Length: 163
Picture 1 (cartoon, rainbow, N blue to C red):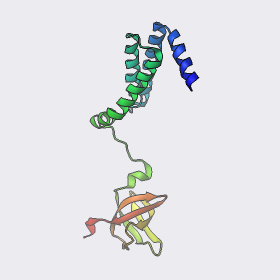
Picture 2: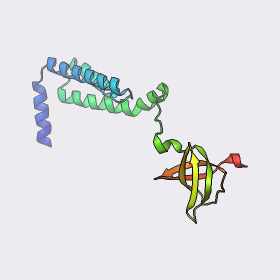
Picture 3: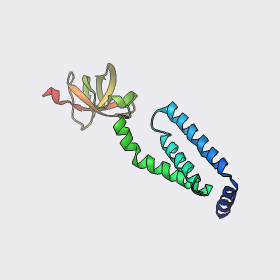
Picture 4: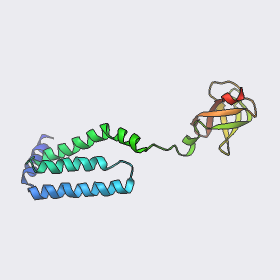
């Protein structure tokens, strides 16, 4: 590992300023293209890291330290700025497939009884096997709410609307 670092440091001394600037400029443009394609605040942080490293070239920072600046800037911005930027821009992860059922309400088609391993519910137009979250029996035609999904089984509880 020590030889690797020494070789990396020595080879970085041989890079010209023009080569370093070109490297960081190309990396910046590539990251901008990736960000434009994904549009999910994925590569923008690497753009910022590449720009920081690009600027460091003008201060005569050796290439090996430019790499550290790149990695450090990208890491810090991902950890500190990304969560705030996502909330300000209204970017939220959308539940897909069965995850979208959590919190939805439905109707019991067959009494939900964990002991007898019975229970069917209709949620979002589809019929599912159901089990009670707390083990209580839920009668037919009662309104339920989905708490979690395990495989093809919905774990449900009786909704407050039944009272």
